[in-house]
Length: 250
Image 1 (spheres, rainbow, N blue to C red):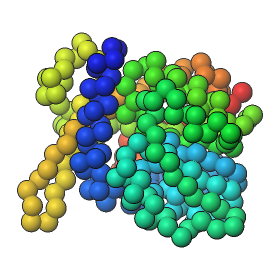
Image 2 (cartoon, rainbow, N blue to C red; image 1 turned 30 degrees about the vertical axis):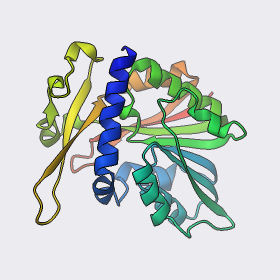
Image 3 (tube, rainbow, N blue to C red; image 1 turned 90 degrees about the vertical axis):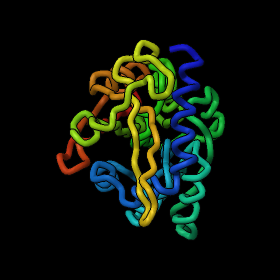
Image 4 (cartoon, rainbow, N blue to C red; image 1 turned 60 degrees about the horizontal axis):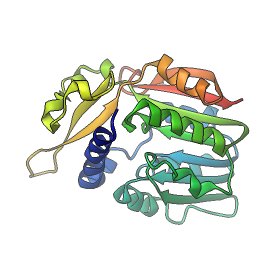
């Protein structure tokens, strides 16, 4: 994928989260069942980094879990980070520290923020499917591996919107944003998002999403030096709207 197309896709998502970030965060106050399963079964004491942390819902739940160590949330959206700082204000203590940083995973040097740190675990829930270009996704997996301590854990989820008739009805042609399907990689998708405030007309936004297959994710992990220890589906009424994988650094 050429750089012009990558920047176009990046711009679509940046515009969405800056324009609809507050409304979007209002629909994401509760964490998904798959993330709750992660907190109860997989999360450990130690230092954790959350890529694409959003508006702070996971930070709140992490603090409630009683785990000790630190939680660092990373996101590119100033709007979402402002909300995250608000909802987690005062939750840090002697045994658990919450911090947030702003960075874009498409920046080739985002990991320099942590040049003096290594993490026990890194998570990326509902974030990787917004990353265009297979080479960039591969680079992110490699950087995650480099930021983990030996034997560290990488847990991530990606949207499986093809399992929802409602969501599939929101797929838009790429011509909507002046692109052609031939410009994109297979399973790159443009979706609309709708939100209505009481007494106001419906507003719609657009988001770029890559539809991952399990094998594709496993290959990315293996090439970056991980081994997959678990794969499962969760979320939504059908319990299959997200694909989760748990990877261990070799």
